[in-house]
Image (cartoon, rainbow, N blue to C red):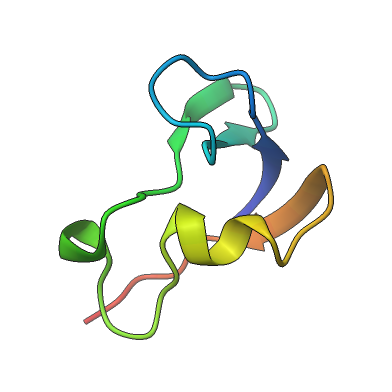
Length: 64
C-alpha cells in the first residue's frame, strides 16, 4: 500500500511530525516518533525527518 508523507513542522505536539495520507481516505495518522513504537529496521519520524523533503511517498508493509 502506497501512502503520502508530509512534514508538519507546525504540529503543536511534535515539530518533527510526519503526516500520513492515503488516497481516498485523507489523513490516516502519523509516522511513529518513539523508538519504543518502531518495529525492526523501521525508522522513527525523528530519524526519517531529515532524510525526506517536504513531501515523500512511503509504503506500508506487513512486518512479522
